[in-house]
Amino acid sequence: MPVWPVMMYDFQWPEHQRYQADLKQICRDLEQANSHSGVAPDAKRGLYESRFDFCEQENPAVAAWTAWAKQCVFESAVHSCGQHWPQGVSVIVEFHESWCHITRDGGYHDVHIHPNSSWSAIYYLDCGDMSMPGRNGINRFFRPYNTSFTDAGQAWMTANTTIDIAAEPGQLIVFPAWIQHSALPYHGQRERYILSFNSRVKLAS
Image (cartoon, rainbow, N blue to C red; front, top):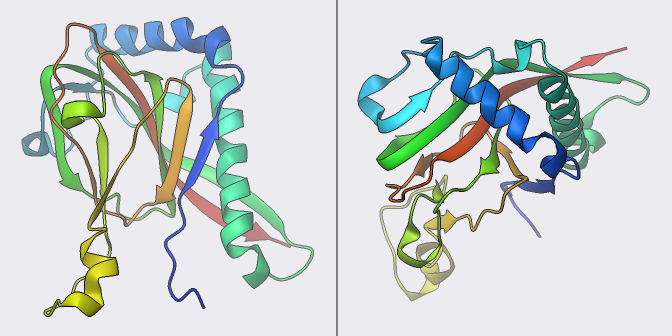
């Protein structure tokens, strides 16, 4: 009897190899153009964060990735929520915020959520020197419930306070925007490239 489950989804982009180099170059170009988000500067160090309009770039690689990512959100929303929608409705997925990260040695992003959004996502464009051993630069998700008491009968909860993602290039993690998450400190010679977005899902008859 699943009560209040937290749904997260995992996708792999078949076109990753085709578009990876172009998307990375767009990230570098945005940084060179001084396109910075300026959002929550005290929550992050050692990483570049673009303005929140990445998916609005007029570029075939961005258009291809955005179309695929919207389809992923659509499938996630249908799987988790479709049974609660009226029959025959059309579903519209909007990316109202989208950005890229370039993380360098020592970079990290503190625990945070994405307000005023439905589904958020992290796409691993280039993992650089990320690794699960040592938890180097990985993304960590935190359980959404708390309790004032724990004992042996709560072991299922205390044993799963966080989830660490062993990411691969081309992987997209779609998750509820209200889930707390972070990027643990990254150490490496290569740069780590991430694409992210916040979405809203609307129904139209």
